[in-house]
Image (cartoon, rainbow, N blue to C red):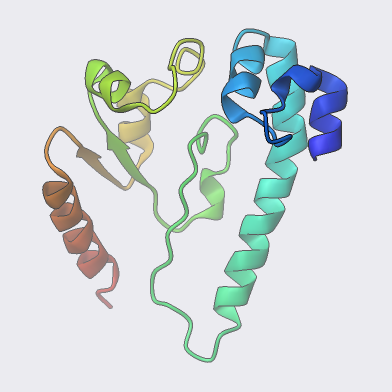
Length: 149
């Protein structure tokens, strides 16, 4: 993976430690649709295979969990919603998301499906404008609901 990234994007994506600097990769690919498409073509099949392997491992356990959760940022954008029994969408107003972001959001959100459309397609949704404790309480109640027979 590292070799492919460096060959395609150049050594400028390496940090001082010689490892991939994800911020530098983001600066390149979110400013270049062709590079982004290439990166997604490289990553998505690997991420998908890893998820499917994990799901199979859980199912093979003597006592598999009643509920397992997978975070998929581009779920609807890549058409992967059919892989899941239920879909939960957690949104927040754009300005709040930007304030909470650990990385620059410019160029990253424009291609995403509108929150309203995601909420309409989801089985459950929550607008996260409160505290982590409030979010945790909502998630706990949702898990309780999902575990009902």
